Each structure stands twice: as C-alpha cells, then as structure tokens.
Length: 387
Picture 1 (cartoon, rainbow, N blue to C red):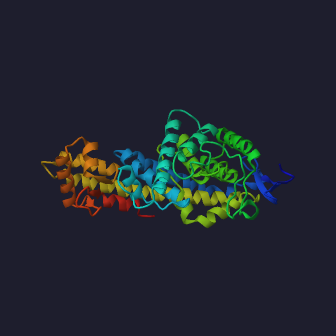
Picture 2 (tube, helix red, strand yellow; picture 1 turned 30 degrees about the horizontal axis):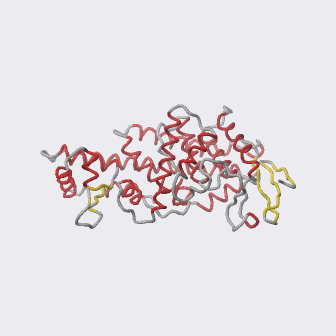
Picture 3 (cartoon, helix red, strand yellow; picture 1 turned 45 degrees about the vertical axis):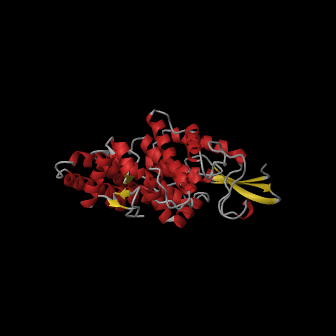
C-alpha cells in the first residue's frame, strides 16, 4: 500500500515498498488535464492541418473501387509495424506466407504475434460496427485476442494487471517509468472510459491524443499495452467516423521518432508537457495521413494499369483476372492456394499465373521447382515504400 502521496497538477506520485526497495509510481489524474496544463490556442494551426490531411485520406480511400482489397494488406502492414516496435522481426511477407500456410523466414512466435494483432484489430472493428462502444470491456476483449496465443499468452490476456509493472530498467527501483500500482488501475481506467464517452467539445484528434497518452501512463496490462494503446487511436477515429475505414495508423511515425515519442509521453506526467505531446501527436496524424493518401493513390494507379493489361489477354483473361483479384487481396500466393480460393482447377490457375508472370505482374519468389510461391512484387514495393 502507498506510504506517501505528493499531489501534482496532472496526477500524483505514490511511494511504496517493493522487494525491499522504495518505489515511486505515477497515478495520472482524470482527463482532460487542468486548463493551466493544456492550452489549445497554439495548436490550432497543426490541428487544422491534421484534420485536412485526415479528410483527404478519407475521401481518397472511400473512392477506391474495392476498398477491401486495399484494407486487407494495409491492415497487415500496420500489424507488422506495431509488432516490430515491441521487438518482433516479422515482415509483411512473413505474415502473408504464414496466412497462406507457407513457411515464413522468422520464428513462428514472431509471426503469430503479428497475426494476433490483425485478429485483435478486426475484432474491435467488428464490435464497433455492431454498435458496441469503446469501453473497458471492449479494451479487455481486444487484449484477450491480442495475447490469445504465442508470446504473452501467459500475461493474463483480457485482465487488468494485479501486480506492478515498469518501463525501462531491470526492476521498478531503477525503471525509467513506473505506472500506477495495481490497486489504482481500475479507477484510472474507469476515469479514462468516462472521458471517452464524455461530450465536452474537445476536437476528436485532441481527444485521441489525450486518451493514447493516458492509456500509456496507466499501462493497465502486464503485456501488450503499446499495441492496444495504438489501436485505441484508430478505434476512436473510426467510432466517431472521422474516418469511415481504419486507414490511419501512427506506428511508423512513433517507430521513426521513438525517442521523441517517449520524451513527449514522459512530459505529460510533469504538468507542463501536454501541449508538446499534442503537437507531436498531431504532426504524426498529419504526416501519416498524407503518406497513406499517397500510398492509396499509388496503389489505385497500379491496380488500374495492371487490370487494363490483363483485360487485353483475350482468351484466358477471365481466369487471369480471378487470380489477379486474389493477388490484390493477398500479394503472396501459391498455385494451390490460388486455385482453391478462386474455384479454378489447378491447371487453369497454373496457366493463369504463368501468364501473369510472363507480363511481369507476378514474380516467382520461392526459388522452388515444386510448390512455388508467387508475389505481386510491385504492390509489395508500394506497401513497403516508407518502411
């Protein structure tokens, strides 16, 4: 139990004894921060730029002929990035091979962890689209799916922690940051849930930035906090329909600016860092939305050009188009997988893939003589362009 408590503007530090040493843990206060700790006036310009960038992205992706083709691989790209921040070595190619029951080039645990992220994201979106609000129950459900198998499955999936965790260092006593003691977690998360449901006039992007930082300060789970916290941003924007589809993910921005990301988060716990954090967060939203728009434009251009090329095949164009649509959905595939998914015979699927390979749309990527695997390499290059 805490022995002392020191009040600060945006939370308090409590001191307790763990394993014989005194530890100071931070208990964040409810959102939003006090007005003296948060001034939106200097953020108006970057907020407007971020909103405009998100609007352009939403307009571009909503105009996609078949948005699901784009979303399938784009969501998996985010899963790879978010998991890489946590230390996995899996690539997008590894994940796609795994999903096609092929052998990835990294340990299975790494790919399972990324696959779990895709499942958690899809579960959350399905619940939101069914009218279920962002809530503590949904957050726990997402966490349970995220840690359902592989590494982390021992870390109480779907349950708020009952023991102390920490960030950096080898123990709480030398950690860079110590989140609230376990007896404070439920209260802190209940305050966060109330904030998520409150109508207080704050712009949605500001609310998302505040909520993400607060979640990371609470660190309510033993494992998976970073991934759930990043998903929370996407879920908030999708639930309130600032984005009609889940096409904005900040993992790459946070990964590229990892040290500044952590510095800005730490600043929110000192009482004078909220504006700096929100400025950083909004820059991330703006830059990520602009990059995602450019990626969507490039993919749309590629899809249109390659489809037009296939339509010139004459005889055999229909089967080639069926295989091509599969490659748009999953840009790494075997002949057997393509045949099964397209309801074509193995010889017909094989002939279609050979023809797509001859014109440079697909490339053989396994180097095998049997059980060959083919990649839609130009599409993969666009998806991986900024990685």
